Image (tube, rainbow, N blue to C red):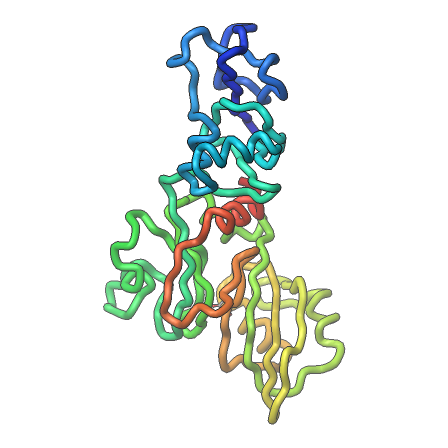
Length: 282
Ligand code: URA
């Protein structure tokens, strides 16, 4: 991964040809830096300015945090002031917690109600998640899909690469579902589901499975998997004799639905987006 973070300590003397987009790694010390002679030739923005804009703290507070070694850029702690970073590529963490520092992208969490289709518009005039977000942000896409009857956590983002990676099974982002099923759940079912069962379109295995509650011939089970195939949870549970009467997605990777009311939308914090980016190697 390219690292373009460059320190630009004013006292540093130029030691080479200057900053280049091809530089592989940021120098660990300002004295190692290759800094152009003229300040306006230097690229990127000052780290404390980027931190302040991201709401980490005022520039002064951000400088104190840098001084205290609480900030890292691309995995390396920074203790010198004046480093320049490129918010479009550099990864910044505060106290070890990655944060999103770009301002040109937004990500939302929605608690999708049942009955709403996962599409930004519909030519048959059915209610869509697009109707729910309205003109919240230009270029929003939904991350994967929930069935019309499924409710719960749906992410929407203007970051196409993040959306792609979160939805693609190769990135193995775990999705957690609560399913209300009828029938009794065999004691060893979790073993069978973890080992994998064969569906019409190929095998599927869960990351975890547990019974949350059982009452009057109905159970609530929690299924965690990193599959993206259509109706996968309903088909899987149906296959093992547990037809689903209600399905709710409660988490996508590190983002949890928690107490969000049905039909509500909230903007993810910079820390939450950072956690999503970490989960998919961005
Ligand atoms: N699996 C399903 O069966 N439905 C969904 O909406 C999501 C996962």
